[in-house]
Image 1 (cartoon, rainbow, N blue to C red):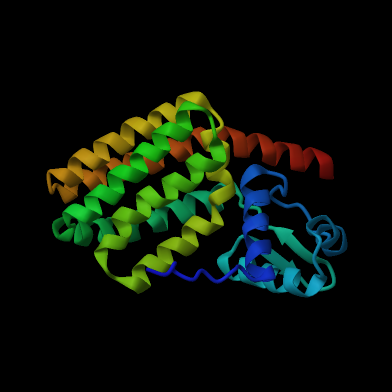
Image 2 (cartoon, rainbow, N blue to C red):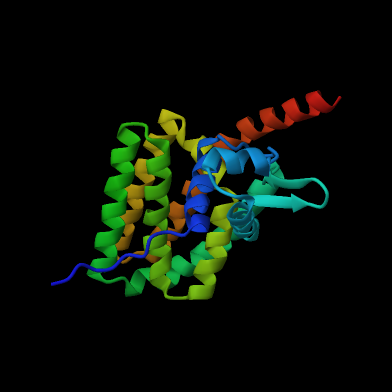
Length: 228
């Protein structure tokens, strides 16, 4: 049997992977200006594929463009973050309510596999791997609703807050909370209990906001002091 052909990534796709990694790890920080010349040189590419990659990230809400100033990593205020999580609460409750009753054994296997990957990454404090596995975990559940427009909207909201999720995972206590909540979520899904699954997810988001609130308030105080 011949091997399945895998198309090599384009320059734009490879750059997207790197830019997302830079944002998640904090190499590109919220509010930081993206200097295209130096970034293109660092990546060993021309500005054309870099610019196209930045346009994609702009569409996802991960970077913003200001005329005559250029691209910046998106920076959310605490109120912005709370609003995004509130919208997620509304949309994800609908997605999970629809998804849980129709999840197959294969769907649940994918959910549990992602949960194990989250636990493994948390155990060695690999925040990047944990962020990636956590995303697979949640969308294994959300995607099972089979409502592509709803899933697409939720993905946009996740993209806009990815860097803050990484900040949350930097604390060992937060990683432990995430693991416990994921176990509770899997148990609810296995029991076919959509209402409990929605409740666990609500607590999951509330705990993240509570942990990020002092971090973002401190960052806001620092920005105000720098401007005064």
